[in-house]
Length: 169
Image (cartoon, rainbow, N blue to C red; front, side, top):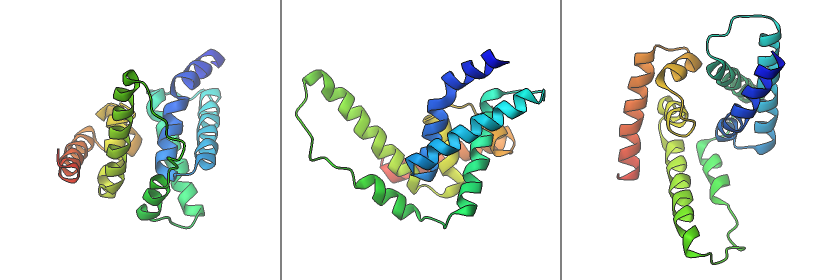
């Protein structure tokens, strides 16, 4: 049991943290939520409950903790979340070698797409993020959100269509 937990933690902790950070836009809160999600997962594991999909369970726990976080905290607008991301400091920008140029372009594109995901209607934000940033399957997303697989797939498809409109791709 201990080995299973450690293995899962090593495999998923970064993904769960990124998911939490994406949702709460506060590094410390995201770390706390991630830690609490794994603590609750340990409780379920130690309780001997049958777990069909460990990955989906961890993300479901994290999602519920994020909901609790926002219930306790005053609501934050999406505009405030994007302002925080746009306030990056580029004063220390230095010229890099040509082989790093491609990595910088990919990182810039990824940042652009994540900002566009934030602009999506709420019903599409989470499914698009989970599908394409965290690489979860529609089955896992359906389990996390508590909807049918077909409903998750439809949300993903519609979210992609909206994202295409926002990005001009």
